[in-house]
Image (cartoon, rainbow, N blue to C red; front, side):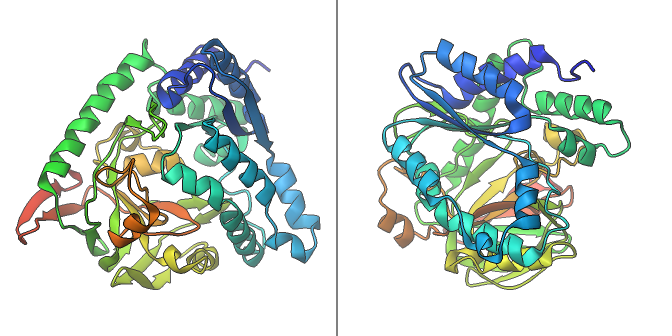
Length: 411
């Protein structure tokens, strides 16, 4: 059967990832991770990388069927294991200035029928083993980028009434549209989009709010902001001096909340797909920055296991603002994938903060991040809380209120 994915747009996405997403420099090595089904995109990315002067391109493939085989046949001890050697090797490569590209496309419901206790244990082991990589990524030591490929199982989840071929084509077109890869000149489009996000970040940084008050259906949450926090969005310069767009697509501006200054309650407005499990209708209550109560209508056992990962797993590491009218929200598509769904809605993230979201974030030390209220954890999990009913006020340092969002839109 002919491939339903536009090769022309796939080539544009590959080129966009290398030149705008990564800003790959001549001589830089590149580490890629991808589902094995994404091989066509991996090959196009590899070609663009070498044309841009890459030193060595290495790819690590994942396979959904191999993951399922573990849950069917592995002994119990297997679920407390993770390839620490792989993450240590990647961390060493990043210390030597390798760039990082993640191509996502895993089936969001892959582990829906697996034992949630085993899923929780495996997730915890992977989070702990992955700390060397996550620390370097969240500290923005090197240029990195995430893009997506429309795998068949993912497509069928998003468009369940369509044939596999039609669903894949529709998901591919949705990915291209959200990533601006279907435009005549995607790189130029991203330059304009980055300028718009920079205007929002600049205004928020000028306000220097002490906190944000989120008020919506099922939500009344006061999020204190870290001391010396800085808003970011779109293109940013990594510590190695290379400007990149970490997420393609991206419609957000985001910063670091204060780990000890979050109070109130909040509910999710979109499902969260986490490590092959769908978690829906999340409801949590915060006190002094910590989640003291949590529930979900689906995937609750996995959610509670996530919160037990470590002390920082119950605290926030990111708060992000996205208007309800964003292109991804306007598409009306629920992607069941955080890279896309978080760009349709304001969101918060449990766990590790981004040290780049501080004034002089390229120079700040780990101890300074902690002193200024930044959270530390073995996880970083975004989930969506925004809607067309969300109002957000910024609370100034003197206690005054400034309208930031009204009914899901910039005020």
